[in-house]
Image 1 (tube, rainbow, N blue to C red):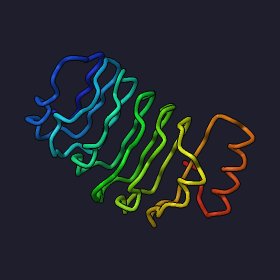
Image 2 (image 1 turned 30 degrees about the vertical axis):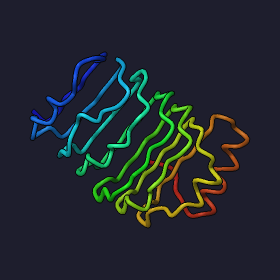
Image 3 (image 1 turned 135 degrees about the horizontal axis):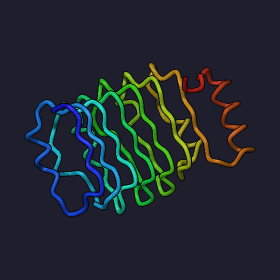
Image 4 (image 1 turned 135 degrees about the vertical axis):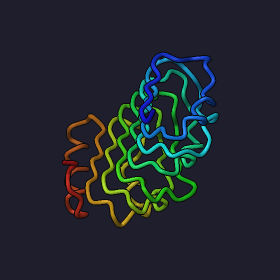
Amino acid sequence: MNYLALHSISKLPLHFINRLKKLKQLRILLGGREHIQEIEENEIDHLEICRVRGLHDLSQITKFRALTSLVIEDQVKLQEIGFDRELEALEEITISNCKGLARLSGMEQLPSLRKLRIFKTAIDFDSFIQQKLPNALSELEFATSKSKIDQEIQASLYNLGFQKWT
């Protein structure tokens, strides 16, 4: 099995995922849990977490050593995503509608990151763009849902040489 989608799980422990050695894609949709810390180092290359009520801790994200794609959507309690060690395969990140997310740090730990999309978060663009970003990053979208601010951000990104996500 290389694909697993978990829908509306709440109390179910996730450590069974550690036995799925060939698992490449994991989607966790709906339900409720505070974190995914039961999942140990693995070979998952695509992780999607969407509308998981109460999720506030992704500090173990770097256990997903083979990640090429990360999608985090509708996580209102999540305040920070930090990459504290290198994830050399990660190429694409989409973070959408995580209104409490104020920090995305450790971007320099993602040398292969080419595409980054950030929508409707609490991340301050001016602070975010000051951090060291990966050299491979060429496509960057950042939107707040406030059209005037978004136009200014888009102009800044264009002036910095970033393309829109294609």
